[in-house]
Image 1 (tube, rainbow, N blue to C red):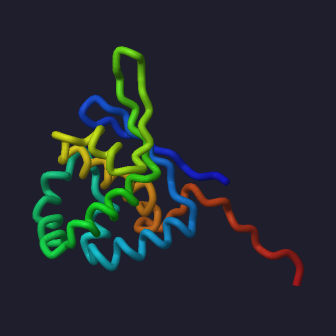
Image 2: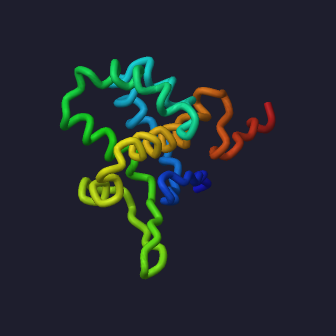
Length: 146
């Protein structure tokens, strides 16, 4: 399987996001569109470094009536394909962001960073959907004969 990986550095932590498989990505996209509506397109095309502050009003509208448990679940699902590489005295420690505990460990006191990384993960998984190119997918071959 040829899934792309992209890196972003936020608050001196390197985050590596691996693209979801097709069906996992489709399932999550359905939830994102249902919950975030038009905000989903803005997030998928956003630059996490340059535009996070400009997206604050869009996020506020999208999240104002959001159930807290659904928000937690959605962020956990969006970040599930991402690994944080944190420097420590023992070297670089990888943390797969696949549980609330690991999200707390990495993002406590860094909520803005969490949104930046979540936007990055959305962009890795759905940016190609919005710009019309499918970078990580194998090229389909035309049927032969006829």
